[in-house]
Length: 480
Image 1: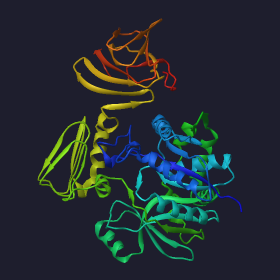
Image 2 (image 1 turned 60 degrees about the vertical axis):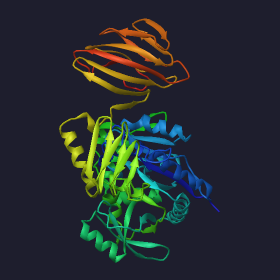
Image 3 (image 1 turned 45 degrees about the vertical axis):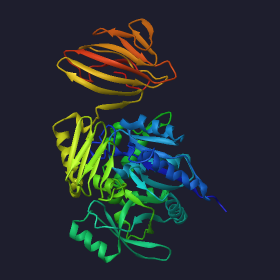
Image 4 (image 1 turned 90 degrees about the vertical axis):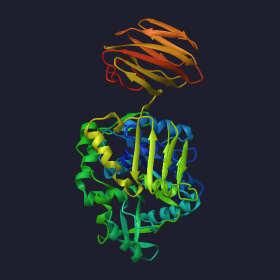
């Protein structure tokens, strides 16, 4: 008997706007830890690895994500000791159909038409054993040429999910129709009728089946993505499609491009019900739904005190948060932004994010603590002509060789050892030692040690923006 080969594909793009202010464009929800020790992205990767315990062959995961998040992806994979087969870097977001096409083209070139198990990186599953069993069943069916969607029996009239209408078939449920996110009366009708399921966004199919269906229904996407693929560049694990060519690919979701057109077309598209404690953590109400609660239905995360409140979520990141007399409310605190919202309207948080984007406010993109491939920095204070940052550099890592036109910097080592380049001089600084980087001086900060390096940086000058950097040498490919 031939072993079925499975290629996990983790879709790790997206910005998670409805989980602002915790999720931001520069550090979106899929890389956040909401419970336990692992991020949603890490959990998605590990769930795919569970198939290796069955009678199918599982390849290393193929990750599709944004070029902006490439080092987040590698760092988080390294934490769970997983080496990807490839990380496909989208230079710009074109939605999920082109993203999946990149993965299909990659695996068809390196494998012999495996079964793709496609999963978003921003969902939670509480019953891994049931999930693995359902996925194994879906793989078996997809190996014969079917497209298998994982559907979720609805437990409430949810307006934030798309739905699938299905009926009993020979081996599973036949998909009759995909329907968009409904209003509340329609969602209540779907729940009462019992023939509708939540669309989980997870599906299983051969790479060739996807490409054939895309060529049939959206040949423009197929052709444009092939052009971008032909112009790709390989950088170790990273695979970068041609930037200009990929920008010309029509932006479309997998559902719109292919799945919604399959019913009645002669394509074998099925739905397998999944009962594994699934949740699409797309908004704060969904976080409340899956979280632990007290006797009054309240969820508290972080340093939180709750009094005389019901069905409320309070999330503290950096300080004490206290709530009194609230009902069905979401309170989320971060060092630079606080959200207070009606829990029933948590989908509308995206309206705030849209406004932040329109007004070009940094809270749309970055946290006060900003992660970089070499570590992170936290802007702990600022005022006219000065800014104070706490900086952590990973062992063996270094910042770029750079200079600034408008600011000088003072560095004080808190822990670890700093290797400081100033002009043509290189010196080592230990704890409690400091140095001064004059305006216009070429410099670099590196950590030659085996423990994290932490420094306090005081910037002073007429302009303190992050774009006042001229890079001369950078191991992360960010030279000017």
